[in-house]
Length: 394
Image (cartoon, rainbow, N blue to C red; front, side, top):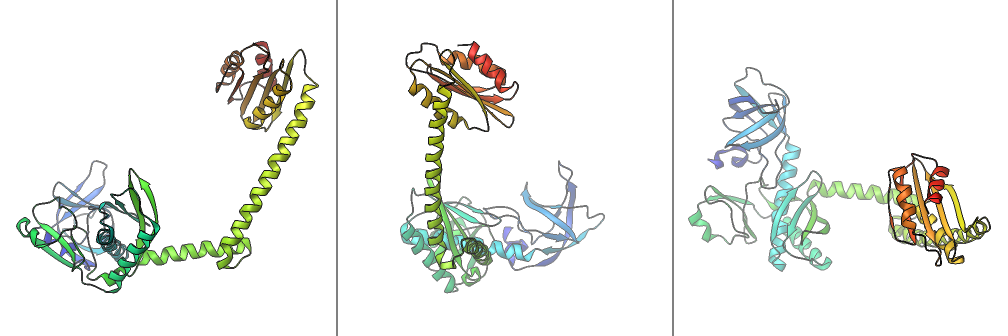
């Protein structure tokens, strides 16, 4: 019977003794044992498994396989026939807080807006639920969070009841159940009635607090990220440290950080625009110098540490100045070569044939059209050699 399991009989059980009824190794060679009874919660229902020790040996995983609860261990228990189990209580109670908080939050979404929860994930740092809606407003999130914390502060009892399928009609269940026998209900009277196989505290007050952190769109639904209990303090401490460090960096008090960062962003935007204008002016000047160096209607040049975007701008400036011009530019960056080839409006030569000749030499990829191409690849030849091949292919 499920309700005989120690983690169901007493979620606050921190240690126990039990007989070993099976000791074996899995397909990967990991030692595991099956006990006559256990206080270790196995992974299930969105809640991770418990950790702890059996006879001092670390329990690495707990899962239900073929109707038996396997405790995967860091080593062998030898000839032991009985074990003393000790639960990692900090982890267990954290899971109890998060799982009960999820019940409260999901019920609050239904109570206020009829937004059903369709999935739940209890992560190492953050908890999330997926709501079967396309959007949730900030105002709705604030209202739901307030109701959830009101329920927590009221310290309502959290009741556990084992019922039969025939008894379900007595309870206003929040969602349809997937099981039909050994049905376990987790009940917050006059607020939430839900089938659940997880561990929970005995009263909502032990959840302590609940904070919604963020939301995101996920496969047509809204994923809500939140934390409860001790994790709220952890998040507060982490964010406070980040705020303090940011405050120091921008030389502003905590309540003035946002304004200081906004000013920095505005200044940065202005500097980026000024730099872009200066770079464009330099490229214009450089294009005029290259025009003076053209030979037989061709401008060719190679550079070091130039982006392909800069090559493209320079090429466009050059062909805009001379309709009869062909421009061949190559840049060497670390272990890569990049090139651009462009033609003026009165030139008939296809730049695609330039690209076709250049790309195999550098094991590269490129794109473009008859008038303008670009590409890049490995530095298997020198920039000068690539330019020579490009010029000879036109």
